[in-house]
Length: 160
Image (cartoon, rainbow, N blue to C red; front, side, top):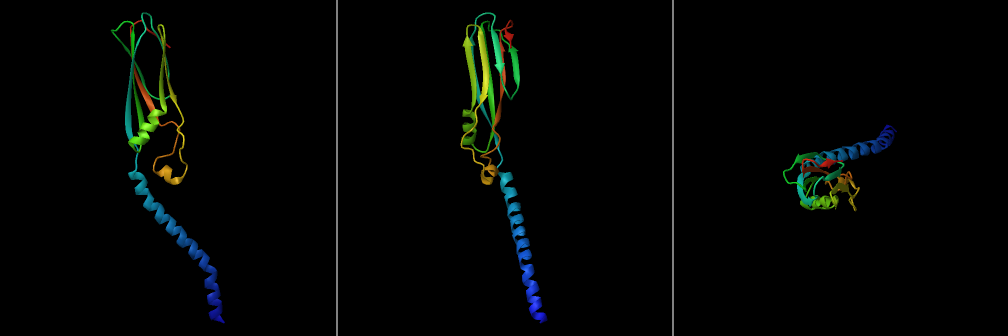
């Protein structure tokens, strides 16, 4: 009778031991993924933009931007505004960086002596939500870079 009780008792604990084994396997797999995820790190890619606009005297420049730095520089070229921008993108590949670059619009509207400059960060489409895509850096936040500006303006330019 003791033998049957012992085997009965052992069978009751098998699910617990199986659960421990499964948890141990999952932890082992997770530890194997950590070096893999850290080796697939994003790199920084830069895309340059330049536009030269003839404004005539008394230029008015308006800049609307979300992320990045702005530097306004006095220029010796009267009647001209030179707009330089560098888009900086963090991505895991050149293709991903170029895709992000295409979704960061720089718009320059010019009318008379007025120049309106803006950025538009369009949402990337077809961004996956699976854990593998997140580990590989294919999915994530909607804002994926910044635009740094250097704008050369004549001395009497009004900045808005």
